[in-house]
Image 1 (cartoon, rainbow, N blue to C red):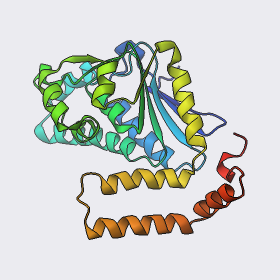
Image 2 (image 1 turned 90 degrees about the vertical axis):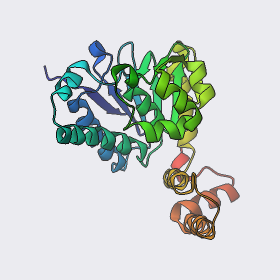
Image 3 (image 1 turned 180 degrees about the vertical axis):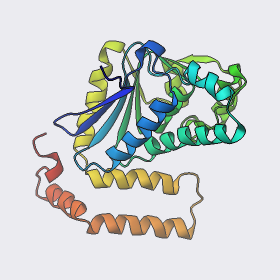
Length: 264
């Protein structure tokens, strides 16, 4: 039997369900999983039939971060080999973070280290009430370097200064309070909460959602300059003139569903 560290299924509604499939090691990362996920996220980005991507995990845990055997191998790597390895992880995170389709993290159990990075890279994060989070790197004498841009974007520098250094475990309610996850639900309602978001997303223009995600990247953290104002004006003008924008506006005025929401 061929072993797959993750699986991907595409349902009839255009949702790609990417499932981490290493439950025996709590879905920890190794170089094989990292390389496979990076390629998969890039493929899903370019696949026309994909409307949304859900990242979930088999077993008790979402992801425990770095695999112990992988970390043992890295201990014997040269500096240059470690840089190459870290760049692979950074590339995988960036492929998820910039994926043009809406992304949802479906979190149960433990999300430690790089697992927190995966959550932070998704547009929407839903966690079970009993989920546990930890930025645990400093306990190993390491730093959460490759995931830092995404985690700090999610929780802000003030919270990062605490949790990066303490490596405290925190619960789902705290994760919601500091901005890492958006919704917390009982474990038995986790799939239903994800399905709710998917239903909401299916009513929105696919191109508009991709453009809106790119808009966040373009505007976040920047002062409101003439350049930013001009850029945002050009973006809305392009959206209005697009086929999707014209269809959405016509559907609204005609009091009908737009083409992408037919059958909802």
